[in-house]
Each structure stands twice: as structure tokens, then as C-alpha cells.
Image 1: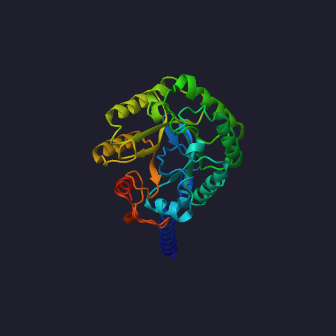
Image 2: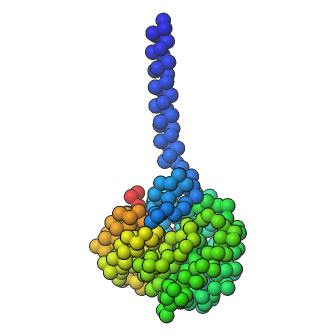
Length: 327
């Protein structure tokens, strides 16, 4: 009788363990990126999860939200999440001549709210481009990041990108570094923990220059941007050098065409970039969510949908990039 009872309880225990294993597996699949990894931080050259495991962010960037605000919606973000994205980047151009307006802050908030509800990471991007030098609108940048650092300090899924692509007569030592120190100090006044992304010289390509004299603050990563048909092995060598010097890097903008955002897709260079980024566990965020008639647009030009996308709605570059995510 005792032997029979032992067999019964052993069988019951095995059944419970099997059921729990199936349930746990299903729960793991259903959990969101933020539920899996929690608040991110920087350790050495890597972005790591709350438990210290290496994390590779993979995502998509909006185009300028002044021009394509219609894609900031749950259905759009959810479509890319289903395809394998874990990150959304919200690009607000910093130059009034390129669409900047404080009235767009509500669209930034809307984008953060949607990404948060979907359990995705979200990068708030102060999109310096035509203004070139981050000091040009430094006062506005300080106000911008004061607002959002106050608002999102307690959230685990927010990252701040403080200068998209410094360019022109701009140096790391004279312009970007002092600007970054001021903006980082302002953010840290309210948000002590979330990751801050700092742009690098020459449209965020010269990560090797930043690596020679990095910032002293914690939880900082440095932006590298590339367009695979233009930025080939010379820029990959810069990344290798920066990595060897211990610089943590995040690719917050890239595509597989040329630097104009147009032209032919360079799959060979694109795959070389993918291999290198995966080797170093560096995250990458693709430009851009729109149906603009150019190669870097992830949505087909003749697609009028603003959400509910499937792979058939993607452009050629969109399909190629989404294939990197493994879904």
C-alpha cells in the first residue's frame, strides 16, 4: 500500500512539474521585453538587464514626428513588436526649420505611453541634424530633457538620446563633450538610473574619438550610425577600435542603403554590419517608420496603412532588416 502511495505521489509530482514547465515556457514566450529584462544599465561594453545579462536592443525609429505623426499608434508599434522589435525610437528634430515645436511634446508622450503599454523599450531622441552643433539649441535641449526626465524617472523602459548626429565644424572635445556633460547632469538631477545615449562626431560615426576620452558618468552609451552602402569597412574599423578601448556603443540609427537614405540596398555590407553587431552584442535601431518614397523607409511607398503591418507591407529594406531579428 505504501509503495502504491509513493508511486502515486511521484506520478503526481511529475505531472505537476511537467505542467509547470509548460506554463513557465508559455509565460516566458508571452512576457514582454521589459518584463524579461527590467531596467537596463551599462556594464563594460554591454547593455545589461536588471539581473546582469547582456541585452541586445533591436528596433525601429520613427521618422521626424512633425512629418509622420500618424505612425505613432499602438497598432503600428505592435506590428513591429510581433516581427521581433523590442525598441521604439521617437525622433523629434531639434531645429525649428526641420519641424521642431513644443506642441509635439504630446506626441513624444503618446509614443512613450504606447511603447510602455506594449512592454517595449523607448528612446527619446533629440534629433540634431541640420543644426549640426548640439550647442545651437542647448537651452531648448535642457528644457526638453528636464521635462521628460522628471516625467519618466521611475519608468524602467526609457532611454534618452541627447544629440542624434553632431556634424559640420564640431569636435568631441570642444562641442559635444561639454554639451553632453550639461545635459547629462540635468537629466541625472531627476533620473539617476536610465541609460543616456550620446552622439559622436561626424554624424555619429567617430566612436573611436569618443573612446579616447569618454565621459565619466555611469550608464552612458555612445551612438554609432551607419548606412551600409556608404559606411563600410572604414566605419566598422572605428567600431572595432572603440570596442577594444572599452566603449559601450548603441546603433540608434542605420539602414542598408546609402547615407542619403536612398539608393540601392547593399546586402553584403549590411550582413557584415549585422555579423559585427551580433558578435559584440550591440543593439541596432532601423531608420525609419514611414512610407516615404525612399529606400530607407520601412513601409512600402504604396502602403497607406498606418498600423497592422505584416511583412508584405514592408519595403525591400524593411524586409531585409526585419529578417535580422530572427522572426
